[in-house]
Amino acid sequence: MQVEVKVPQLSESVSEATLVAWHRKAGEAVKRDENLIDVETDKVVLELPSPVDGVLAKIIKADGSTVTSGEVIAVIDTAGAVAAVAPAIDPVQAAKAAAATDAPAPAPAVAAKAASPAAAKLAAEQGVDMAKLAGTGRDGRVTKSDVLAAGAAPAPAAQPAPAPAAKPAAAPASSAAGGREERRVPMSRLRARIAERLVQSQSTAAILTTFNEVNMAPVMELRNRYKERFEKEHGVKLGFMSFFVKAAVSALRRYPVVNASIDGNDIVYHGYYDVGIAVGSERGLLVPILRDADRMSIADIEKAIADFGKRAKDGKITIEELTGGTFSISNGGVFGSMLSTPIINPPQSAILGVHATKERAVVENGQVVVRPMNYLALSYDHRIIDGREAVLSLVAIKDALEDPARQLLDV
Image (cartoon, rainbow, N blue to C red; front, side, top):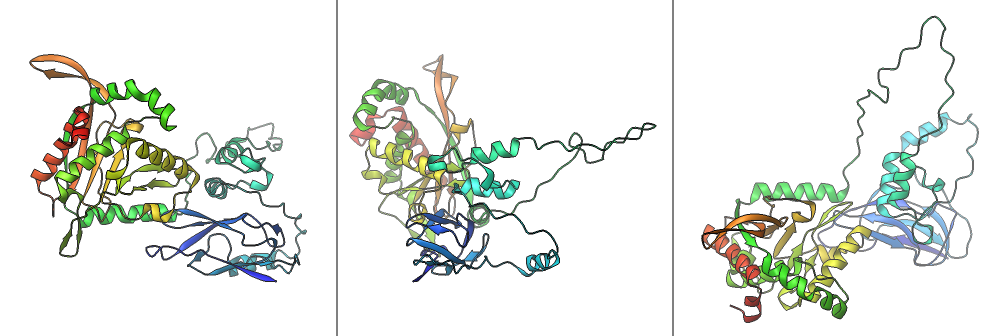
């Protein structure tokens, strides 16, 4: 029986996707639930598993093809018959193939190996043959580190022709020592989408940023006192981001316009708090959402953030988890940033930027003391948020962090 392999249903906000790399070739056996190909949208990379056991009889859409929801990209023969045809190639490739008819027949292709989306993309960019790599990942899966190691390995040196005795041969102008190499690669869908949204945010919103500083000593003392018991009780480490989330939600409750968004000529006030957490990945910046963050405990938040970080590296964040959000938090401090002006994530109207905590000299009660200080930045859309609400909401975040007990007492 012939079974069609179709592109999975994409979300309403995603119209197209790109096929990254087939993990099996036409004529090879496949197993049910085995990942056949990675499908990249402008938000996530999806793994498309085989629906049945059988033989990959035909590949209709080759690597790099643009596809839409429900489009047939391959056919699997469940009877095991190899009725396969090679993946379609463009006219230029066909012309090259016709011109090479007198060339020796190529050696049989080595079966493609399973690889992470990042490894497959990197291998294509660097021209590394994954079939020759020994994968160090789970079940022999080729990882990005395997590709990098292969790319760094020196190629066997060619035996140079003897130079004339009278005059040494001059080094080529583009030698490795003095060359000025360039490498051109197409933007991924995610990177192109990020660029589009950032430009959209800058050109459509009246973005201003207000700053403040917060003494992190109370939060650090609380964390140091309970972190071991917390991890033992909840199975996750107690970080700082959960405190920032709780403090932000407390401020959003007091100043609802900071949690609002613009829809045409209307201001939409959200009666819920879906906080986006910016997470870096090899493919770019992702902002998965903590749904109903006001109802989540510190432990719930820490578990969700840890899960987001792990799945972002593996390309497992779903489209639904990236959709929506009423407010965002970006932590540049994990990379050492001291101060920045974060860009609003449309259609949201504000974003909190958190930075590195450093010991600084500050004045308290007329005395110079050393405190662990963190600079906070709140970028906001001045079309609906006035300076008063922006400044006061950031002060509310500062107060909640400098006195964590206020969150328990709701004062």
